[in-house]
Length: 55
Image 1 (spheres, rainbow, N blue to C red):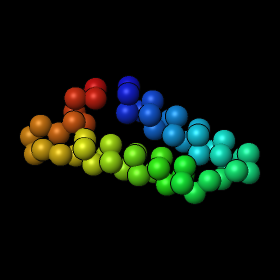
Image 2 (cartoon, rainbow, N blue to C red; image 1 turned 60 degrees about the horizontal axis):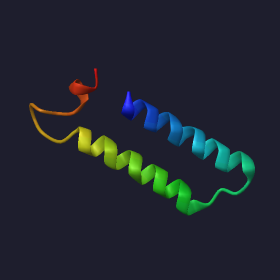
Image 3 (cartoon, one colour; image 1 turned 180 degrees about the vertical axis):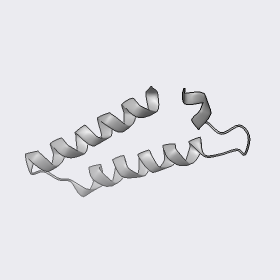
Image 4 (cartoon, helix red, strand yellow; image 1 turned 135 degrees about the horizontal axis):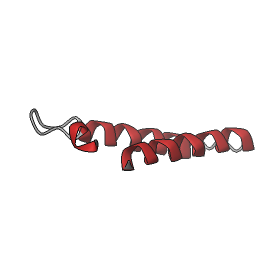
């Protein structure tokens, strides 16, 4: 639930930034990079990946 919650909050934050007209590229880049890092961490390990543990 934590990963999906983080992803949902990030998407809402990006949408609100774009709607408000204050699309700060630093905020958008930070959210994108942090989501990519989280996905990368969940892919680490051969047999002990994090994805199966999210269920």
